[in-house]
Every structure is written in C-alpha cells, then in structure tokens.
Amino acid sequence: MSVTIRRSEQPPWTVLSVGGDLDVVGAPDMRQAVVTAVAEGSRLLVLDLSELDFVDSFGLGAVVGALKRVRQRGGELALVCPSSRIRRVFEICDLDRILALHHSTDTLSELSVAGTDGATSTRRRP
Amino acid sequence: MSDTVEIEIPARADYVSLVRLVVAAAAELAPSLEPSRIDDLRVAVSEATTNAIQAHIRSGSTRPVKVCCRCSNGSVVVTVSDEGPGFDVDALPEMPPPESEARLGRESGMGISIMRALADNSSIDSSSEGTEVRLAFLVGGQVVHG
Image 1 (cartoon, rainbow over the protein chains, first blue to last red):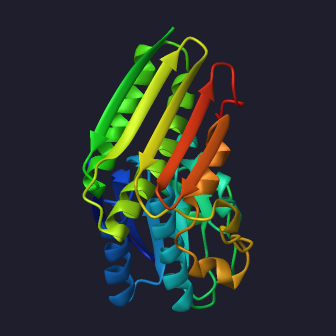
Image 2: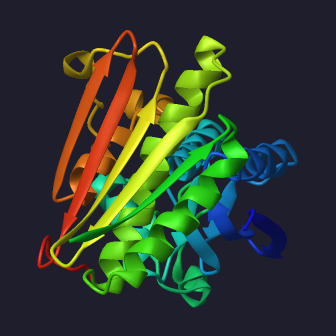
Image 3: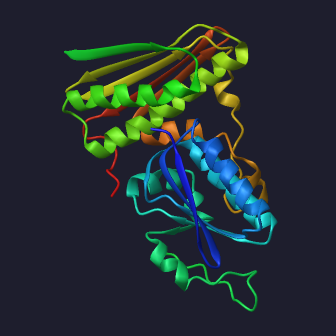
C-alpha cells in the first residue's frame, strides 16, 4: 500500500492526515506535502498518523524534516499517533523526547503554542 | 525442522513492500511469534531490504537482492543479502542527542539502530563484495510493547 495524504485545517493548526506506508516510497510524498504546507504559510502543523499502517526510518526521517522546517519558521509540529506499534518506532530513536505525540486530534484544541499571538507554550503530553 | 522462503527482487524501492508482505506472511504461517513481534519483523526487514536496494542502486548493480526467511518453532531468521560495495560496520556515524540542533539535520541514519533494537539477535557482515544482514526473532524474545 502506498502512502495517502489528506490536508485539512483545524485553526490554528494545519493537519496532514497520513495513511498507508511511510517508507522509502511513501516518505518523499509526505515530505513534499510538508514543504508545500509550510511554503503556503502553515507554521503550526499536525501530522495525523492515525491511519498509518507502517513506518520505518525513512518515515521518521521525513518527520524529523518536518519538525526542522516548521521550527525554522518559528512554528511547531505535533503528531497524532494512537498506535503503540507506530509509537514504538519513534521511541526506539528517542524522537518521542522532541516530538509532541498525541493519541487523538481532540487534544489539539488544548494546545497553545509559542509563536501564536499572546500565547504561552504548553506542549501537552497525553 | 524449519520452513524456508527465499525471494529475489529487483533493486527497486517499490519492491520493499512486497518483501515485508512475504516475510510477514511466512512468519505467520509458522505459529511461533506474537503478532506484535511480526510487526517488529516487518520494520527490521524493511530497513535491511531498503539498505540493500540502495547499495545496488548506488553501485549501479543490476543484480537482484536476496531475502531468505527461515521459520521454525523457536525462531524466525531473515537474511538479506546484497552485492553492493559494502561499508564499515564499525564506523557508522553516531546520532546526535535528540534535543540538539544537529539532530534535526539528520533525516537518515536511523535504520541500523532500529534493526538492532527490534531483532533479538542481529549481525551485519559487510565487505567489498556485498553485505549480509541477519535478523533473528526468537519465540519468547523481547518484551512485547503495548
């Protein structure tokens, strides 16, 4: 299965819902979607991995690239990752230490992020 | 006694998902590993196969990449072999700490760490004639995540 990417807006967040396989074939597509979103002005980005079936180091690399891009614009990246199977791959590489991992997009409304007008930084971990 | 499945694939990235599928299906036929361990197997095999394919692409080799999966009651052992130029297993660059700025500049180089973390036993034999990665998943191995 190849990767699928769907973009939606949950202000102030731009949500990229990523499904399928985030591997050497799928990761470039997600990387491009992130580049496009950031270039169009999205600084607060969510990667919703709820429908993701598979991730390996190439997928992780694309996520690290996304984090780098949004931070360069003074923004932030959050991940929605309810699957322990997918989380485990992030944890092996200690990326859970620098990425906000959420179980659901429901918790996004509780986030306020540095860089938004007058907001404080409260990165909430589930 | 063990069941062996061997496949040869062209050195193309779009064959990695096929290898994952075949190896996971073979492991499921030998009722020895927990489903979560088969998930680990898929990830580790994906890393090894992708590295092998990239080694062939970089060297211009048109030879196939070979994957062998041996399933028994006690283990599933996967061997991925390529005929690429090889690399120095002891000279792999260390990954910067996650919190460092340098870490964000490293979008690759995590695959071998992931393989080693997921497999119960792993080995990499590499020379100028190619690389063989061996990944063993043992029944009753690693703590199951959940």
